[in-house]
Amino acid sequence: LPARDDAPRVPAEQLVLGTLDPKAPAESAYHLRVGLMQRGAGVRSIELAYHDAELTDRRRKREPLTLVNVNEDQLDLVGAPPLGLTLVPQDKENPIEPVALGERLWTVVPDDAGRLVRPVAADTQRNLLEGEQVVFRAEVPSLKAAVVKTISLRKGRDALDVDLRIESSIPQSLVLRVQGPYGVPVEGEWYTSTFREVFFGKLGGGGTTEVETRAAGEIMDRERKGDPIRATTLPLKYAGVENQYFAVFLQPDPVPTGVADRIDDKTVAMIVEPAEPTHKSEVSVYLETRPIALAADRPAELGFHFFAGPKSATVLEAYGAEDLATYRKGWQFPLIGPVATWIARNAIGPLLDQIHKLTSAVAGVFGGSNGNYGIAIILLTFVVRSLMFPLSKKQAESAKRMQDLQPQLMALREKYKDDKEKIGQETFAMYRANGVNPLGGCVLVLIQMPIFLGLWQAVNNSVSLRNSSFLWIQNLAAPDQLFKFPVEVPWLGPYFNLLPLIVAGLMLVHTKLFAPPATTPEQEQSQKIMKYMLVVMAFMFYRVPAGLCLYFITSSLWSIGERMLLPKLTARKALVPVTVEPTPARRTSRNAEAPAASGWRDKLRDRLEQVM
Image (cartoon, rainbow, N blue to C red; front, side, top):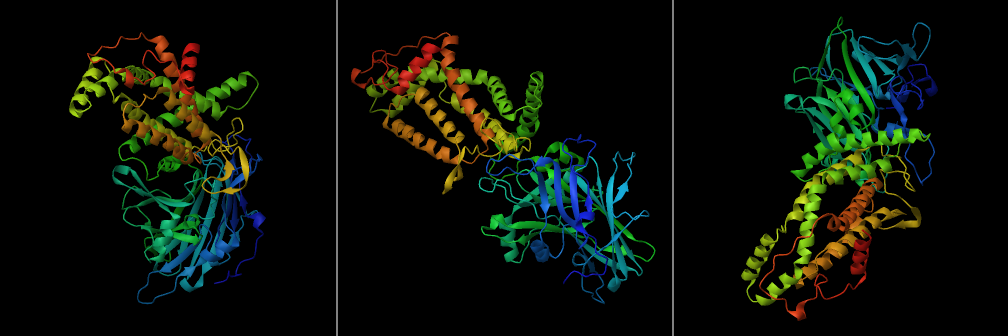
Protein backbone atom coordinates (compact mmCIF):
# COMPACT_ATOMS: atom_id res chain seq x y z
CA LEU A 1 0.00 0.00 0.00
CA PRO A 2 1.24 3.53 -0.65
CA ALA A 3 2.07 5.78 2.27
CA ARG A 4 -1.03 7.68 3.41
CA ASP A 5 -0.90 11.46 3.65
CA ASP A 6 -3.11 11.74 6.75
CA ALA A 7 -0.49 13.78 8.62
CA PRO A 8 1.23 17.09 7.79
CA ARG A 9 4.59 16.41 6.20
CA VAL A 10 7.75 17.32 8.12
CA PRO A 11 11.16 17.75 6.38
CA ALA A 12 13.56 14.93 7.19
CA GLU A 13 16.25 17.31 8.45
CA GLN A 14 13.87 18.34 11.27
CA LEU A 15 13.66 14.77 12.59
CA VAL A 16 17.24 14.27 13.77
CA LEU A 17 18.29 13.25 17.27
CA GLY A 18 21.78 13.82 18.67
CA THR A 19 24.93 15.37 17.28
CA LEU A 20 28.39 14.14 16.30
CA ASP A 21 31.35 15.51 18.23
CA PRO A 22 34.11 12.87 18.33
CA LYS A 23 36.37 15.20 20.34
CA ALA A 24 33.87 15.48 23.20
CA PRO A 25 34.21 13.12 26.22
CA ALA A 26 32.28 9.94 25.44
CA GLU A 27 30.71 9.79 28.90
CA SER A 28 28.92 13.13 28.49
CA ALA A 29 28.26 13.48 24.74
CA TYR A 30 25.97 11.89 22.18
CA HIS A 31 27.29 8.62 20.77
CA LEU A 32 24.80 8.60 17.90
CA ARG A 33 23.15 10.89 15.40
CA VAL A 34 19.81 9.38 14.41
CA GLY A 35 17.69 10.36 11.44
CA LEU A 36 14.03 9.43 11.85
CA MET A 37 11.34 9.23 9.18
CA GLN A 38 7.69 10.17 9.31
CA ARG A 39 6.65 7.16 7.27
CA GLY A 40 6.22 4.37 9.77
CA ALA A 41 7.72 6.54 12.56
CA GLY A 42 10.95 4.61 12.14
CA VAL A 43 14.69 4.91 11.77
CA ARG A 44 16.15 6.29 8.55
CA SER A 45 19.85 6.43 9.47
CA ILE A 46 22.23 6.06 12.41
CA GLU A 47 25.75 7.50 12.48
CA LEU A 48 28.36 6.78 15.15
CA ALA A 49 30.32 9.64 16.70
CA TYR A 50 33.36 7.64 17.83
CA HIS A 51 33.90 5.30 14.87
CA ASP A 52 34.99 6.28 11.39
CA ALA A 53 33.74 4.81 8.14
CA GLU A 54 35.74 1.96 6.66
CA LEU A 55 38.89 3.00 4.82
CA THR A 56 38.76 2.40 1.06
CA ASP A 57 41.71 2.40 -1.33
CA ARG A 58 44.07 3.28 1.55
CA ARG A 59 42.69 6.82 1.71
CA ARG A 60 42.53 8.05 5.31
CA LYS A 61 39.76 10.58 5.68
CA ARG A 62 37.65 11.06 8.74
CA GLU A 63 33.99 10.36 8.04
CA PRO A 64 31.53 9.07 10.64
CA LEU A 65 30.43 5.46 10.22
CA THR A 66 26.83 5.18 9.03
CA LEU A 67 25.73 1.96 10.70
CA VAL A 68 22.11 2.06 9.52
CA ASN A 69 21.12 3.56 6.18
CA VAL A 70 17.65 2.72 4.82
CA ASN A 71 17.04 3.55 1.17
CA GLU A 72 13.70 3.85 -0.60
CA ASP A 73 14.09 0.55 -2.47
CA GLN A 74 14.57 -1.37 0.77
CA LEU A 75 11.69 0.48 2.37
CA ASP A 76 9.38 -0.51 -0.49
CA LEU A 77 10.51 -4.16 -0.27
CA VAL A 78 9.98 -4.47 3.48
CA GLY A 79 7.00 -2.15 3.76
CA ALA A 80 8.20 -0.72 7.07
CA PRO A 81 11.33 1.04 8.34
CA PRO A 82 13.25 -0.23 11.37
CA LEU A 83 10.87 0.19 14.36
CA GLY A 84 7.88 0.13 11.99
CA LEU A 85 4.72 -1.45 13.45
CA THR A 86 1.94 -3.74 12.28
CA LEU A 87 -1.19 -4.33 14.39
CA VAL A 88 -2.67 -7.83 14.10
CA PRO A 89 -6.21 -8.15 15.58
CA GLN A 90 -6.97 -11.39 17.41
CA ASP A 91 -10.78 -11.49 17.05
CA LYS A 92 -11.50 -14.92 15.55
CA GLU A 93 -15.28 -14.34 15.27
CA ASN A 94 -14.91 -11.11 13.28
CA PRO A 95 -11.55 -11.37 11.47
CA ILE A 96 -9.94 -8.04 10.64
CA GLU A 97 -6.97 -7.58 8.33
CA PRO A 98 -3.66 -6.55 9.96
CA VAL A 99 -2.99 -2.83 9.88
CA ALA A 100 0.48 -1.98 8.52
CA LEU A 101 1.37 1.27 10.25
CA GLY A 102 4.77 1.13 8.59
CA GLU A 103 3.08 2.25 5.39
CA ARG A 104 1.57 5.38 6.88
CA LEU A 105 2.72 8.88 7.67
CA TRP A 106 2.55 9.41 11.42
CA THR A 107 1.78 12.76 12.97
CA VAL A 108 4.76 14.39 14.68
CA VAL A 109 3.48 15.77 17.99
CA PRO A 110 5.17 19.03 19.08
CA ASP A 111 5.64 19.99 22.71
CA ASP A 112 4.06 23.01 24.38
CA ALA A 113 6.76 25.24 22.89
CA GLY A 114 6.07 23.94 19.36
CA ARG A 115 9.32 21.94 19.12
CA LEU A 116 9.24 18.72 17.10
CA VAL A 117 12.51 17.52 18.66
CA ARG A 118 11.90 17.82 22.38
CA PRO A 119 14.62 18.25 24.99
CA VAL A 120 14.63 15.59 27.71
CA ALA A 121 15.90 16.38 31.20
CA ALA A 122 18.41 14.21 33.01
CA ASP A 123 17.07 11.40 35.22
CA THR A 124 19.28 11.21 38.30
CA GLN A 125 17.45 8.21 39.74
CA ARG A 126 18.24 6.05 36.72
CA ASN A 127 21.61 7.73 36.12
CA LEU A 128 20.55 9.03 32.68
CA LEU A 129 21.90 12.20 31.11
CA GLU A 130 19.83 14.73 29.23
CA GLY A 131 18.78 14.01 25.69
CA GLU A 132 16.22 14.51 22.93
CA GLN A 133 13.05 12.79 21.77
CA VAL A 134 10.40 12.83 19.06
CA VAL A 135 6.79 11.83 19.70
CA PHE A 136 4.75 10.27 16.87
CA ARG A 137 1.04 9.44 16.85
CA ALA A 138 -1.04 7.32 14.46
CA GLU A 139 -4.82 6.96 14.52
CA VAL A 140 -6.28 3.56 13.53
CA PRO A 141 -10.01 4.11 12.85
CA SER A 142 -10.63 0.54 11.69
CA LEU A 143 -9.61 -0.73 15.13
CA LYS A 144 -10.92 2.29 17.07
CA ALA A 145 -7.43 2.65 18.44
CA ALA A 146 -4.40 4.93 18.37
CA VAL A 147 -0.67 4.35 18.86
CA VAL A 148 1.79 6.82 20.39
CA LYS A 149 5.48 6.12 19.77
CA THR A 150 8.17 8.06 21.64
CA ILE A 151 11.75 7.68 20.41
CA SER A 152 14.41 9.09 22.77
CA LEU A 153 18.19 9.41 22.63
CA ARG A 154 20.28 10.14 25.70
CA LYS A 155 23.86 11.36 25.91
CA GLY A 156 26.40 8.70 26.79
CA ARG A 157 24.23 5.85 25.45
CA ASP A 158 24.51 3.64 22.38
CA ALA A 159 20.81 2.89 22.05
CA LEU A 160 17.49 4.56 21.40
CA ASP A 161 14.71 4.19 23.97
CA VAL A 162 11.38 3.37 22.31
CA ASP A 163 8.15 3.71 24.32
CA LEU A 164 4.82 2.57 22.85
CA ARG A 165 1.37 3.35 24.16
CA ILE A 166 -1.63 1.68 22.51
CA GLU A 167 -5.00 3.26 23.24
CA SER A 168 -8.34 1.67 22.40
CA SER A 169 -11.95 2.81 22.83
CA ILE A 170 -13.20 -0.80 22.88
CA PRO A 171 -11.99 -4.00 24.56
CA GLN A 172 -9.91 -6.04 22.13
CA SER A 173 -6.77 -8.13 21.79
CA LEU A 174 -3.92 -7.22 19.45
CA VAL A 175 -0.55 -8.69 18.49
CA LEU A 176 2.14 -6.13 17.78
CA ARG A 177 4.70 -6.84 15.05
CA VAL A 178 7.85 -4.70 15.38
CA GLN A 179 10.28 -4.43 12.47
CA GLY A 180 13.92 -4.90 13.46
CA PRO A 181 17.04 -3.26 11.99
CA TYR A 182 18.33 -3.43 8.44
CA GLY A 183 20.47 -1.25 6.17
CA VAL A 184 23.68 -2.40 7.90
CA PRO A 185 26.84 -2.12 5.73
CA VAL A 186 29.30 -4.92 4.98
CA GLU A 187 32.87 -4.20 6.08
CA GLY A 188 35.86 -5.61 4.21
CA GLU A 189 33.74 -7.31 1.60
CA TRP A 190 36.72 -8.88 -0.22
CA TYR A 191 38.33 -10.42 2.87
CA THR A 192 35.74 -10.73 5.65
CA SER A 193 34.06 -13.97 6.74
CA THR A 194 31.13 -12.10 8.35
CA PHE A 195 28.91 -10.21 5.93
CA ARG A 196 25.49 -9.61 7.49
CA GLU A 197 24.20 -12.16 9.95
CA VAL A 198 21.11 -12.38 12.13
CA PHE A 199 21.46 -13.27 15.79
CA PHE A 200 19.01 -14.19 18.55
CA GLY A 201 20.02 -13.72 22.18
CA LYS A 202 17.73 -15.95 24.26
CA LEU A 203 17.35 -16.28 28.01
CA GLY A 204 18.72 -19.69 29.02
CA GLY A 205 18.83 -21.56 32.28
CA GLY A 206 20.33 -19.87 35.31
CA GLY A 207 20.09 -16.44 33.71
CA THR A 208 22.60 -17.32 30.97
CA THR A 209 22.29 -16.10 27.40
CA GLU A 210 22.15 -18.45 24.43
CA VAL A 211 23.24 -16.69 21.24
CA GLU A 212 22.10 -18.22 17.94
CA THR A 213 23.70 -16.82 14.77
CA ARG A 214 22.38 -17.40 11.24
CA ALA A 215 24.03 -16.37 7.98
CA ALA A 216 22.14 -14.76 5.11
CA GLY A 217 22.49 -17.78 2.83
CA GLU A 218 20.85 -20.06 5.38
CA ILE A 219 18.04 -17.55 5.99
CA MET A 220 17.31 -17.40 2.26
CA ASP A 221 17.30 -21.20 1.90
CA ARG A 222 14.81 -21.55 4.75
CA GLU A 223 12.58 -18.81 3.34
CA ARG A 224 12.48 -20.56 -0.03
CA LYS A 225 11.38 -23.76 1.71
CA GLY A 226 8.58 -21.90 3.50
CA ASP A 227 10.15 -22.56 6.90
CA PRO A 228 11.72 -19.28 8.07
CA ILE A 229 14.22 -19.30 10.92
CA ARG A 230 12.56 -18.21 14.13
CA ALA A 231 13.11 -18.08 17.88
CA THR A 232 10.06 -19.13 19.88
CA THR A 233 10.93 -21.43 22.78
CA LEU A 234 13.00 -19.23 25.09
CA PRO A 235 12.30 -15.62 26.12
CA LEU A 236 14.04 -13.14 23.83
CA LYS A 237 16.67 -10.80 25.30
CA TYR A 238 17.66 -9.23 21.99
CA ALA A 239 17.69 -9.91 18.24
CA GLY A 240 19.24 -8.07 15.33
CA VAL A 241 21.87 -7.88 12.60
CA GLU A 242 25.66 -7.79 12.84
CA ASN A 243 28.67 -7.41 10.61
CA GLN A 244 32.23 -8.16 11.68
CA TYR A 245 32.63 -5.33 14.19
CA PHE A 246 29.20 -3.76 14.82
CA ALA A 247 25.72 -4.83 15.82
CA VAL A 248 22.23 -3.34 15.68
CA PHE A 249 19.51 -5.02 17.70
CA LEU A 250 16.04 -4.70 19.18
CA GLN A 251 15.65 -5.49 22.88
CA PRO A 252 12.53 -5.64 25.08
CA ASP A 253 12.60 -3.12 27.93
CA PRO A 254 12.60 -4.35 30.63
CA VAL A 255 14.56 -7.43 29.63
CA PRO A 256 12.61 -10.56 30.65
CA THR A 257 13.84 -12.57 33.61
CA GLY A 258 11.74 -15.64 32.82
CA VAL A 259 8.76 -16.98 30.91
CA ALA A 260 6.24 -15.07 33.03
CA ASP A 261 7.39 -11.60 32.00
CA ARG A 262 8.34 -12.22 28.40
CA ILE A 263 6.51 -10.09 25.84
CA ASP A 264 7.66 -11.86 22.67
CA ASP A 265 5.84 -14.75 21.07
CA LYS A 266 8.28 -15.26 18.21
CA THR A 267 11.15 -13.51 16.46
CA VAL A 268 11.67 -14.30 12.79
CA ALA A 269 14.70 -13.85 10.51
CA MET A 270 13.92 -12.43 7.08
CA ILE A 271 15.54 -11.46 3.79
CA VAL A 272 15.19 -7.76 3.01
CA GLU A 273 16.96 -7.69 -0.35
CA PRO A 274 18.25 -10.90 -1.98
CA ALA A 275 21.66 -10.95 -3.65
CA GLU A 276 23.98 -13.34 -5.45
CA PRO A 277 25.92 -14.91 -3.90
CA THR A 278 23.29 -15.35 -1.23
CA HIS A 279 25.62 -14.66 1.72
CA LYS A 280 25.71 -11.00 0.64
CA SER A 281 21.93 -10.58 0.96
CA GLU A 282 20.41 -7.88 3.17
CA VAL A 283 18.80 -9.44 6.25
CA SER A 284 16.65 -8.38 9.17
CA VAL A 285 14.36 -9.69 11.91
CA TYR A 286 10.89 -8.86 13.15
CA LEU A 287 9.36 -9.49 16.57
CA GLU A 288 5.77 -10.49 17.27
CA THR A 289 4.45 -9.97 20.78
CA ARG A 290 2.09 -12.15 22.73
CA PRO A 291 -1.57 -11.00 22.50
CA ILE A 292 -2.04 -7.66 24.24
CA ALA A 293 -5.36 -7.10 26.00
CA LEU A 294 -6.75 -3.56 25.56
CA ALA A 295 -9.58 -1.81 27.38
CA ALA A 296 -11.16 1.60 27.00
CA ASP A 297 -9.67 2.83 30.26
CA ARG A 298 -6.43 0.85 30.21
CA PRO A 299 -3.91 1.62 27.43
CA ALA A 300 -1.11 -0.88 26.97
CA GLU A 301 2.49 0.25 27.29
CA LEU A 302 5.57 -1.48 25.93
CA GLY A 303 9.23 -0.50 25.76
CA PHE A 304 12.23 -1.40 23.62
CA HIS A 305 15.88 -0.51 23.26
CA PHE A 306 17.29 -0.10 19.75
CA PHE A 307 21.06 -0.59 20.09
CA ALA A 308 23.54 0.50 17.40
CA GLY A 309 27.24 0.30 18.20
CA PRO A 310 30.46 -1.71 18.35
CA LYS A 311 30.67 -5.32 19.47
CA SER A 312 32.71 -4.31 22.50
CA ALA A 313 32.09 -6.11 25.79
CA THR A 314 32.34 -2.86 27.77
CA VAL A 315 29.69 -1.18 25.58
CA LEU A 316 27.38 -4.19 25.34
CA GLU A 317 27.50 -4.95 29.04
CA ALA A 318 25.02 -2.14 29.78
CA TYR A 319 22.44 -4.09 27.73
CA GLY A 320 23.32 -7.59 28.94
CA ALA A 321 24.58 -8.42 25.44
CA GLU A 322 28.31 -8.85 26.07
CA ASP A 323 28.15 -12.34 24.52
CA LEU A 324 27.97 -10.63 21.13
CA ALA A 325 31.60 -9.58 21.63
CA THR A 326 32.62 -13.26 21.57
CA TYR A 327 33.87 -14.80 18.33
CA ARG A 328 31.12 -17.26 17.40
CA LYS A 329 32.28 -18.99 14.22
CA GLY A 330 31.45 -22.69 14.03
CA TRP A 331 34.92 -23.93 12.95
CA GLN A 332 36.27 -23.77 16.49
CA PHE A 333 37.56 -27.00 18.00
CA PRO A 334 35.10 -28.57 20.48
CA LEU A 335 37.45 -28.58 23.49
CA ILE A 336 39.98 -25.87 22.66
CA GLY A 337 37.36 -23.40 21.38
CA PRO A 338 35.78 -22.50 24.77
CA VAL A 339 39.26 -22.16 26.32
CA ALA A 340 40.32 -19.88 23.46
CA THR A 341 37.18 -17.79 23.90
CA TRP A 342 37.89 -17.36 27.61
CA ILE A 343 41.51 -16.40 26.86
CA ALA A 344 40.40 -13.90 24.20
CA ARG A 345 37.86 -12.16 26.46
CA ASN A 346 39.66 -12.29 29.80
CA ALA A 347 43.36 -12.28 28.94
CA ILE A 348 44.41 -11.23 25.45
CA GLY A 349 41.84 -8.49 24.87
CA PRO A 350 42.36 -6.72 28.25
CA LEU A 351 46.14 -7.23 28.08
CA LEU A 352 46.30 -5.74 24.58
CA ASP A 353 44.31 -2.71 25.74
CA GLN A 354 46.59 -2.21 28.75
CA ILE A 355 49.71 -2.43 26.60
CA HIS A 356 48.17 0.09 24.20
CA LYS A 357 47.64 2.45 27.15
CA LEU A 358 51.33 1.99 27.96
CA THR A 359 52.30 3.00 24.41
CA SER A 360 50.03 6.04 24.78
CA ALA A 361 51.80 7.01 28.00
CA VAL A 362 55.21 6.64 26.34
CA ALA A 363 54.02 8.69 23.35
CA GLY A 364 52.87 11.38 25.77
CA VAL A 365 56.39 11.68 27.19
CA PHE A 366 57.65 12.56 23.71
CA GLY A 367 54.84 14.97 22.96
CA GLY A 368 52.52 12.52 21.21
CA SER A 369 48.87 11.92 22.01
CA ASN A 370 48.08 8.46 20.67
CA GLY A 371 49.35 4.96 21.30
CA ASN A 372 49.96 2.40 18.57
CA TYR A 373 48.29 -0.98 18.36
CA GLY A 374 51.00 -2.34 16.04
CA ILE A 375 53.63 -1.80 18.74
CA ALA A 376 51.15 -3.12 21.31
CA ILE A 377 50.79 -6.39 19.36
CA ILE A 378 54.58 -6.78 19.19
CA LEU A 379 54.88 -6.19 22.95
CA LEU A 380 51.98 -8.58 23.55
CA THR A 381 53.88 -11.25 21.61
CA PHE A 382 56.92 -10.66 23.81
CA VAL A 383 54.77 -11.15 26.92
CA VAL A 384 53.16 -14.35 25.62
CA ARG A 385 56.45 -15.89 24.46
CA SER A 386 58.16 -14.91 27.71
CA LEU A 387 55.49 -16.72 29.71
CA MET A 388 55.96 -19.80 27.54
CA PHE A 389 59.77 -19.61 27.63
CA PRO A 390 60.30 -22.46 30.17
CA LEU A 391 58.30 -24.85 27.98
CA SER A 392 59.80 -23.66 24.69
CA LYS A 393 63.31 -23.88 26.20
CA LYS A 394 62.74 -27.48 27.19
CA GLN A 395 61.27 -28.30 23.80
CA ALA A 396 64.17 -26.60 21.97
CA GLU A 397 66.75 -28.50 24.02
CA SER A 398 64.98 -31.77 23.27
CA ALA A 399 64.84 -30.94 19.55
CA LYS A 400 68.56 -30.08 19.52
CA ARG A 401 69.47 -33.37 21.18
CA MET A 402 67.34 -35.21 18.63
CA GLN A 403 69.42 -33.54 15.92
CA ASP A 404 72.62 -34.63 17.66
CA LEU A 405 71.36 -38.19 17.90
CA GLN A 406 70.71 -38.54 14.19
CA PRO A 407 74.04 -40.24 13.30
CA GLN A 408 73.51 -42.88 15.98
CA LEU A 409 69.88 -43.38 14.99
CA MET A 410 70.95 -43.92 11.40
CA ALA A 411 73.46 -46.51 12.61
CA LEU A 412 70.69 -48.30 14.49
CA ARG A 413 68.52 -48.42 11.40
CA GLU A 414 71.43 -49.72 9.35
CA LYS A 415 72.18 -52.51 11.85
CA TYR A 416 68.55 -53.59 12.38
CA LYS A 417 67.20 -52.70 8.97
CA ASP A 418 65.33 -56.00 8.73
CA ASP A 419 63.80 -55.76 12.21
CA LYS A 420 61.48 -52.74 12.59
CA GLU A 421 60.40 -53.77 16.06
CA LYS A 422 64.00 -53.82 17.25
CA ILE A 423 64.64 -50.42 15.66
CA GLY A 424 61.70 -48.99 17.60
CA GLN A 425 62.85 -50.51 20.89
CA GLU A 426 66.44 -49.31 20.53
CA THR A 427 65.33 -45.84 19.35
CA PHE A 428 63.11 -45.24 22.37
CA ALA A 429 65.77 -46.66 24.67
CA MET A 430 68.21 -44.11 23.24
CA TYR A 431 65.65 -41.33 23.72
CA ARG A 432 65.16 -42.30 27.36
CA ALA A 433 68.88 -42.56 28.01
CA ASN A 434 69.45 -39.06 26.60
CA GLY A 435 66.37 -37.41 28.12
CA VAL A 436 64.64 -36.79 24.81
CA ASN A 437 60.86 -36.64 24.54
CA PRO A 438 59.84 -37.01 20.87
CA LEU A 439 56.36 -35.68 21.74
CA GLY A 440 57.68 -32.60 23.57
CA GLY A 441 56.95 -30.34 20.61
CA CYS A 442 53.32 -31.49 20.59
CA VAL A 443 52.86 -30.29 24.17
CA LEU A 444 54.04 -26.80 23.21
CA VAL A 445 51.74 -26.78 20.17
CA LEU A 446 48.76 -27.84 22.29
CA ILE A 447 49.48 -25.06 24.77
CA GLN A 448 49.92 -22.48 22.01
CA MET A 449 46.79 -23.54 20.12
CA PRO A 450 44.20 -21.94 22.46
CA ILE A 451 46.44 -18.86 22.76
CA PHE A 452 46.61 -18.61 18.95
CA LEU A 453 42.86 -19.12 18.59
CA GLY A 454 42.24 -16.62 21.38
CA LEU A 455 44.39 -14.06 19.58
CA TRP A 456 42.60 -14.87 16.31
CA GLN A 457 39.26 -14.22 18.01
CA ALA A 458 40.45 -11.05 19.73
CA VAL A 459 41.85 -9.57 16.50
CA ASN A 460 38.82 -10.54 14.42
CA ASN A 461 36.45 -8.98 16.95
CA SER A 462 38.58 -6.01 18.02
CA VAL A 463 36.96 -2.73 17.08
CA SER A 464 40.06 -0.99 18.50
CA LEU A 465 42.29 -2.45 15.76
CA ARG A 466 39.87 -1.33 13.07
CA ASN A 467 41.41 1.59 11.13
CA SER A 468 44.52 1.51 13.37
CA SER A 469 47.70 2.14 11.37
CA PHE A 470 51.25 0.78 11.66
CA LEU A 471 54.06 1.32 9.14
CA TRP A 472 52.39 1.06 5.71
CA ILE A 473 49.37 -0.73 7.20
CA GLN A 474 46.28 1.47 7.36
CA ASN A 475 44.01 -1.04 9.11
CA LEU A 476 45.41 -3.69 11.47
CA ALA A 477 42.05 -5.47 11.46
CA ALA A 478 42.33 -6.01 7.69
CA PRO A 479 45.04 -7.43 5.37
CA ASP A 480 48.01 -5.07 5.00
CA GLN A 481 47.18 -4.10 1.37
CA LEU A 482 50.66 -2.95 0.29
CA PHE A 483 49.39 -1.95 -3.15
CA LYS A 484 46.42 -2.52 -5.41
CA PHE A 485 46.57 -4.86 -8.40
CA PRO A 486 45.62 -3.40 -11.80
CA VAL A 487 42.84 -6.00 -11.91
CA GLU A 488 41.40 -8.29 -9.25
CA VAL A 489 43.39 -11.53 -9.03
CA PRO A 490 41.47 -14.80 -8.50
CA TRP A 491 41.95 -16.27 -4.98
CA LEU A 492 43.92 -13.20 -3.89
CA GLY A 493 41.53 -10.29 -4.37
CA PRO A 494 42.26 -6.70 -5.39
CA TYR A 495 45.35 -6.11 -3.19
CA PHE A 496 48.87 -7.46 -2.80
CA ASN A 497 49.47 -8.39 0.84
CA LEU A 498 53.10 -8.70 1.93
CA LEU A 499 52.78 -9.87 5.54
CA PRO A 500 51.34 -13.35 4.77
CA LEU A 501 54.36 -14.05 2.51
CA ILE A 502 56.73 -12.99 5.30
CA VAL A 503 54.89 -15.33 7.68
CA ALA A 504 55.30 -18.28 5.31
CA GLY A 505 58.93 -17.35 4.57
CA LEU A 506 59.88 -17.28 8.25
CA MET A 507 58.21 -20.65 8.79
CA LEU A 508 60.30 -22.04 5.91
CA VAL A 509 63.51 -20.59 7.39
CA HIS A 510 62.67 -22.04 10.80
CA THR A 511 62.03 -25.48 9.29
CA LYS A 512 65.24 -25.39 7.24
CA LEU A 513 67.37 -24.35 10.20
CA PHE A 514 66.03 -26.60 12.92
CA ALA A 515 64.20 -29.59 11.45
CA PRO A 516 66.21 -32.82 11.88
CA PRO A 517 67.51 -34.24 8.61
CA ALA A 518 65.47 -37.01 7.07
CA THR A 519 66.82 -40.46 7.88
CA THR A 520 64.16 -42.50 6.08
CA PRO A 521 62.33 -42.15 2.76
CA GLU A 522 59.12 -41.58 4.73
CA GLN A 523 60.61 -38.66 6.65
CA GLU A 524 62.02 -37.19 3.46
CA GLN A 525 58.60 -37.38 1.83
CA SER A 526 57.00 -35.82 4.90
CA GLN A 527 59.40 -32.88 4.79
CA LYS A 528 58.64 -32.31 1.11
CA ILE A 529 54.93 -32.23 1.92
CA MET A 530 55.62 -29.68 4.64
CA LYS A 531 57.25 -27.38 2.08
CA TYR A 532 54.14 -27.54 -0.06
CA MET A 533 52.00 -26.94 3.00
CA LEU A 534 53.85 -23.68 3.63
CA VAL A 535 52.69 -22.47 0.21
CA VAL A 536 49.15 -23.50 1.11
CA MET A 537 49.46 -21.64 4.42
CA ALA A 538 50.54 -18.50 2.58
CA PHE A 539 47.22 -18.63 0.70
CA MET A 540 45.32 -19.41 3.92
CA PHE A 541 46.88 -16.42 5.67
CA TYR A 542 46.52 -14.12 2.68
CA ARG A 543 43.30 -12.49 3.87
CA VAL A 544 43.77 -12.62 7.64
CA PRO A 545 44.08 -9.37 9.61
CA ALA A 546 47.48 -7.70 9.49
CA GLY A 547 47.53 -7.64 13.29
CA LEU A 548 47.50 -11.44 13.37
CA CYS A 549 50.30 -11.65 10.78
CA LEU A 550 52.28 -9.18 12.87
CA TYR A 551 51.94 -11.51 15.86
CA PHE A 552 53.14 -14.49 13.80
CA ILE A 553 56.13 -12.62 12.38
CA THR A 554 57.21 -11.44 15.83
CA SER A 555 56.68 -14.91 17.30
CA SER A 556 58.67 -16.59 14.51
CA LEU A 557 61.58 -14.16 14.92
CA TRP A 558 61.49 -14.76 18.68
CA SER A 559 61.52 -18.52 18.11
CA ILE A 560 64.50 -18.38 15.73
CA GLY A 561 66.44 -16.15 18.11
CA GLU A 562 65.54 -18.36 21.05
CA ARG A 563 66.79 -21.49 19.29
CA MET A 564 70.05 -19.74 18.37
CA LEU A 565 70.62 -18.32 21.84
CA LEU A 566 69.79 -21.38 23.94
CA PRO A 567 73.02 -23.30 23.16
CA LYS A 568 74.97 -20.30 24.48
CA LEU A 569 73.00 -20.24 27.74
CA THR A 570 72.80 -23.92 28.58
CA ALA A 571 75.50 -26.43 29.24
CA ARG A 572 75.69 -29.05 26.55
CA LYS A 573 75.15 -32.53 27.94
CA ALA A 574 77.22 -35.37 26.56
CA LEU A 575 75.26 -37.91 24.59
CA VAL A 576 74.97 -41.38 26.01
CA PRO A 577 76.93 -43.52 23.54
CA VAL A 578 75.52 -46.59 21.83
CA THR A 579 77.30 -49.78 20.93
CA VAL A 580 76.51 -49.54 17.25
CA GLU A 581 79.13 -47.78 15.14
CA PRO A 582 77.77 -45.64 12.32
CA THR A 583 78.33 -46.88 8.81
CA PRO A 584 80.51 -44.32 6.94
CA ALA A 585 78.50 -44.68 3.74
CA ARG A 586 75.34 -43.71 5.57
CA ARG A 587 76.72 -40.67 7.45
CA THR A 588 74.95 -37.97 5.54
CA SER A 589 73.67 -35.88 8.42
CA ARG A 590 75.03 -32.39 8.88
CA ASN A 591 75.29 -33.27 12.58
CA ALA A 592 78.03 -35.81 11.93
CA GLU A 593 81.45 -34.65 13.04
CA ALA A 594 83.34 -34.99 9.75
CA PRO A 595 81.32 -33.08 7.12
CA ALA A 596 81.65 -29.31 7.08
CA ALA A 597 78.68 -27.00 6.66
CA SER A 598 77.28 -27.09 3.15
CA GLY A 599 74.20 -25.48 1.67
CA TRP A 600 72.71 -22.09 2.48
CA ARG A 601 70.74 -23.22 5.51
CA ASP A 602 73.77 -24.84 7.19
CA LYS A 603 75.94 -21.80 6.49
CA LEU A 604 73.21 -19.47 7.74
CA ARG A 605 72.75 -21.51 10.90
CA ASP A 606 76.47 -21.63 11.59
CA ARG A 607 76.84 -17.91 10.91
CA LEU A 608 73.97 -17.07 13.24
CA GLU A 609 75.44 -19.30 15.95
CA GLN A 610 78.77 -17.47 15.63
CA VAL A 611 77.04 -14.10 15.95
CA MET A 612 74.89 -15.20 18.86
